[in-house]
Image (cartoon, rainbow, N blue to C red):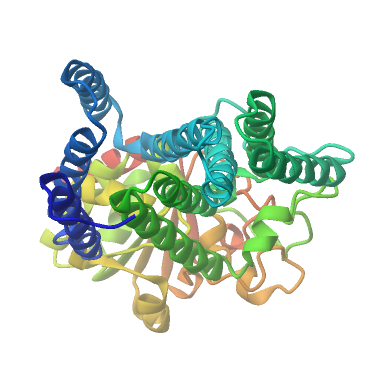
Length: 457
């Protein structure tokens, strides 16, 4: 496998360069949109290179392009920004399925050598896990199945046995060339491993899971590229795999949890999120939209902490409108984004960018926490565990040790929630009972809209 300077080889080289440049541009919010376009151009060149290299007939290419382009266009128009986590999971799964298909085809070729067959078998396993794991993640994120960790007696033993059988099937697939039965068994077992791996992980950990599955899909693509001798597929898969793995590590650190804890917490029939918590002594103090307006109108330093509830309510646009009104009133407004807020990596960033919130207004917890006492009002929109002070103050809490947005130290805290239900950790948030906290109950979009109306009157 190597690059050459034929027309197809040149296209592959340019495609790889565009992938690398595009990924680099995506690292800066100001150039992320252009980076996406650059990467898309690289993908187009990679497809053309594959057509020239393999000699696929143009009618097939045209039909496939029309079908794929139409599907992509429909998704681009129809899928709401709030559904991006599910869409990302689907894309991860489709990438894994494509790599799995390549691996299966390679294993069925009698001329495949032992090395290529081993790589192809690995592509089948990783691609299969990425495919069904992503389907489970999609179902959990979309509410098509329970978001709680699903466990059953003997789950650890079952998963271990299926994983062992998958490895045995891979060895046999390499040893027994072109055995359809063994290849089918390998594929089915890989799919089952993907389900068992993700079904026991709760919805609150889905951002980490989506990131990890993204890495898996990249690794599967790189393995498929090695199996068929495609340099551009190896480069693209390696970039995706490495980026996904690094992001997974960053998010685990933000949760103060190891990757092993996220992946294996469901074994034994209990999740890692059960346990004690801090005291909830105190009184819940509701607040109206008009009183919220009075507090915000007098404030000069304001932070807004968005969470999954903002996504569910589709409130990002009215939140942006509120920020504009507050700035026009002379306040400084910052959005504090916790790394694991929402249901996918960068979930809040995507929603706020879609609403037109300037990147300069976004901050991370460590940027704001040291000066939190100077904040007049902290507005929490649909976030829960990431602002729970028990993570810092209560050793018995399952959240203990997780870095949070320390808004409990602000002069005033206003929390927008539909009810007093707990977050994913299953523990009550002691922030809600503190004397400086007020609860604005109701749909976040409607509540913020009512506050905006007060400013406009």
